Length: 132
Image 1 (cartoon, rainbow, N blue to C red):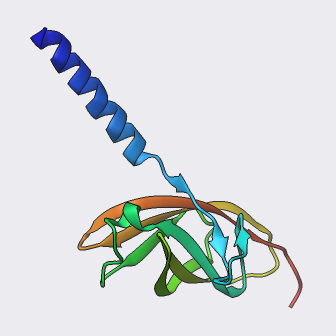
Image 2 (cartoon, rainbow, N blue to C red; image 1 turned 180 degrees about the horizontal axis):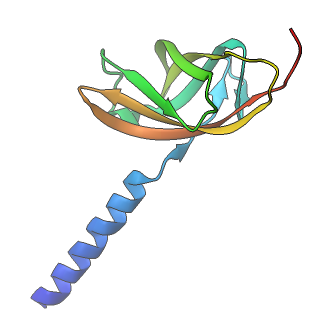
Image 3 (tube, rainbow, N blue to C red; image 1 turned 60 degrees about the horizontal axis):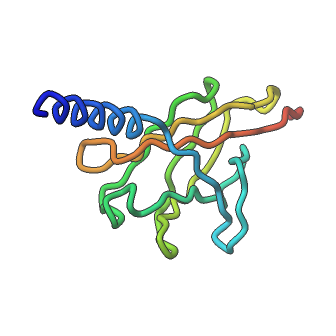
C-alpha cells in the first residue's frame, strides 16, 4: 500500500510539474472587449490577457516580462498593467527594427515578479513586410 501511494504521489508530482512548465496560450485584447489571437507589430494598443490565478490572485507591484521566440530585432515591451474581471491585462508595445521582413513567430512570455517566474504564456506575433 505504501509503495502504491508513493508511486501515485510521484506520478502526480511529475504530471503537475510538466503541466506547470507548459506555456499557456493567451489572447490579446484592445481593452474594450474585443479579443485577438495574436499581437501585431507596430502596435501599442494591445493587451495580453493573463488569468489572475496564474499570478497568485492579484497583480504584483514589480511585475515584468521576459520575451523569447521572436526574430532578432522584434520586441514586446510591457507598458502598463490593469485588471478586468478575473484577468490581468498586460498592455504591451510591439516593435521591430526592420520592417522589410515579415514576422511570423510564437512569443514565449515569462511573467515575472519577486525574482521568479509566475507563469509563462505564449501568443503569436505577426507583422507584414513593407518598404520605408
